[in-house]
Image 1 (cartoon, rainbow, N blue to C red):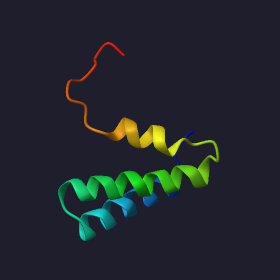
Image 2: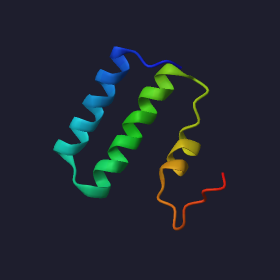
Image 3: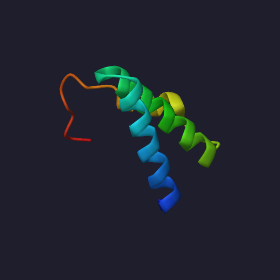
Image 4: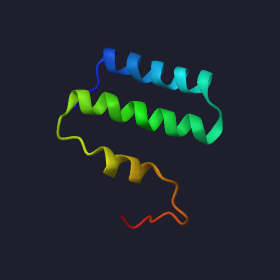
Length: 65
């Protein structure tokens, strides 16, 4: 998927809203959730659970993947 100007604008709005309404970890959760909403609108096969799991901080990064 190539991102267009409308995608960049929507992503910027998501980040801006999250920063105004939340702090720290809450803002990250809000951003991830809103991005999922955007991705689902773009792709009905988008896997929200898989994406949110991938967003979780890892204890030790796995650089071999």
